[in-house]
Amino acid sequence: MSIRDVLIIGAGAAGSSAAFHLANSGRRVTLLEKEKSPATKPCGGGMAAAVQEWFPFELQPVVDEVIERVDFSWCLGDKVVAELPGSAPFWIVRREKLDSYIAEQATYQGAERLNDFYVSNIHREGEHWQVTSESGKQLEARAVVIADGSSSPWPTTFGLGPRVLHHASTLSVRLEGRGNLESGTARFEFGLVHHGFAWAFPIQGGINIGVGTFIGRNSTDSDLILKKLLPSLGFESNAGERQHAQLRVWNGHSKLNGPGLLVVGDAASLSDPFLAEGLRPALMSGCAAAHNLNKWLDGETNSLDKYTQTMRKQWGESMAWGRRIAQVFYRFPKVGYQLGIKRPTAPQRIAQILSGHMGYGDIAQRVIKRLLLQRS
Image (cartoon, rainbow, N blue to C red; front, top):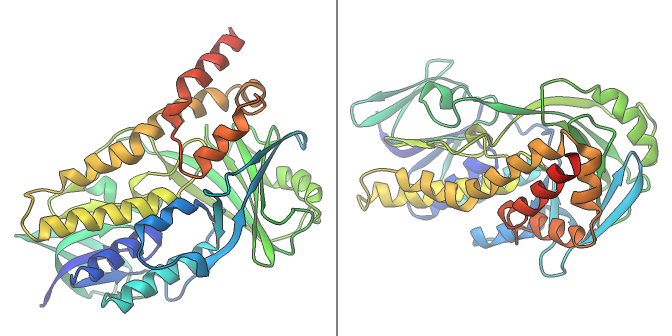
């Protein structure tokens, strides 16, 4: 059996990013994807344009919309507008299109891709990892990257990621046409959703609409919320096919690596616990995984611990504050909207967070203090 350098389980944004950077460094990489062909993914598709700095090729070909303005509302009224800086816009993509595009860039660099490969077993055999498919096909590599999303069983199997998983319950619908959503504008709706919010993001020729709940599972009647939200956007109340999902969100600092083993993206529970942003940490972790694997494969380091440390510093420290904000905001959403979004400086701060130029730690202590004082 020929031994690869790295096997990557999952050809989504995180796995494909890791595959590209590894293949670009001359590694023998294989992407394992359980689906036979790309499927529509229930994801808003928003990401900071700053992610471009992690790739030597242009991401613009798969950007459907450049967001320059964010509209916030409370129960479909009481609106607040945030103008994003011209130098730091927010991008909207179709997830299946982005994932396929990055995976194609990886194959151009020499990465192998195997579709319809459903992983049934992963185990360590001496100095190598063996990965077995449901059909019995077996592959071997020096390292494995777990990148198969929020439903992945493997982080728990190997003691990686948070000990207690926390999920956001989401309902997404993709519609043809823009309704009354203006070009270059994204919308966030608070008040209608118990312990969460709804969003509307424009895509080419259509719109992605979703509902997310962050405290408690299945505590919201998302279909009922859409019946109110969709007409406000210019659509029939029952329009579109709905997709339900459980999204793993960040739930504390945790180990993300083992011997020759890394977990990235949604499988690593990296999604923002306040705004459910998952694409930026997926791309970030995929690139960081490749960087640290290259050093490890070259013998420059004895372990992959630096990957966990990097993700903690570059993402986890901000998310620790984001989780604290979410726990207070979503329990007292009306107060949170008044004090966290309607304040004169809030739109600028929100724009900076969405564009990747500011972390939650820069605002968290002031926001939490205001929220708690208002409730006392």
